[in-house]
Length: 64
Picture 1 (cartoon, rainbow, N blue to C red):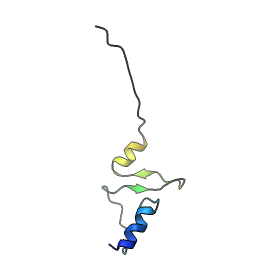
Picture 2 (cartoon, one colour):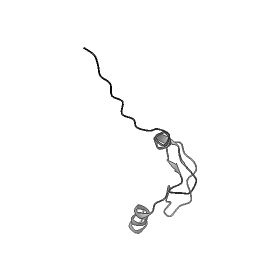
Picture 3 (tube, rainbow, N blue to C red):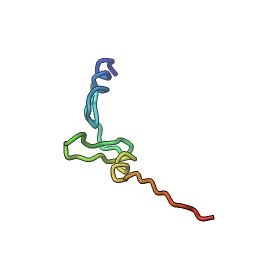
Picture 4 (cartoon, rainbow, N blue to C red):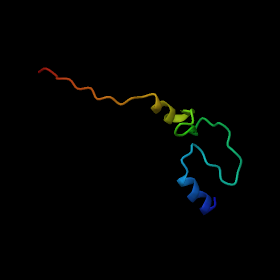
């Protein structure tokens, strides 16, 4: 991988960057999807599951 290509890829806000090659096909292990207001959500891997989850804190008093 070229150092210049890698430096540019790190700065881009995109879902995928391909350096000196064609696009990869949809692979289950690779996160895919849009960024910002593209209208495309993330899919594949744990990244897509996390988009549908909301962290929540639940507390309760345990009686003795």
